[in-house]
Length: 107
Image 1 (cartoon, rainbow, N blue to C red):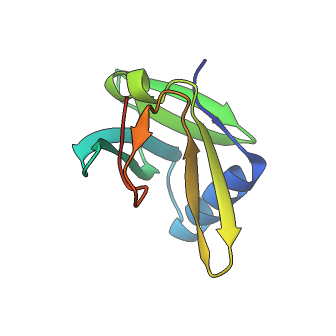
Image 2: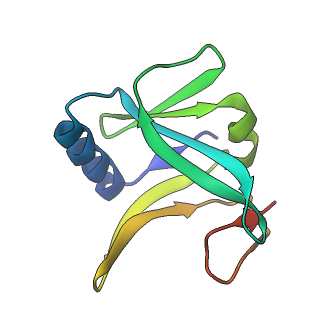
């Protein structure tokens, strides 16, 4: 399945990369954290490692290490604004439960 992103998310990443002045894309991953067990990690990618998978949408590369891909496969990355709040949203079909604050999840 892989990782996909909406056009809104891709445009936001392009803006961030342009303002930053460098980077080849966005790196997604997971880490053990929070009350539900796992949390998303999102950062700029400057290099691609041997164990990375690359997905591209709307001209933006999304880089995921193979260990994280097990938990993220099928995820759609979106960017939304609601009132004064804005941010990336993960539409992950693998999530079985999430904590009340939305910061962590389990599979």
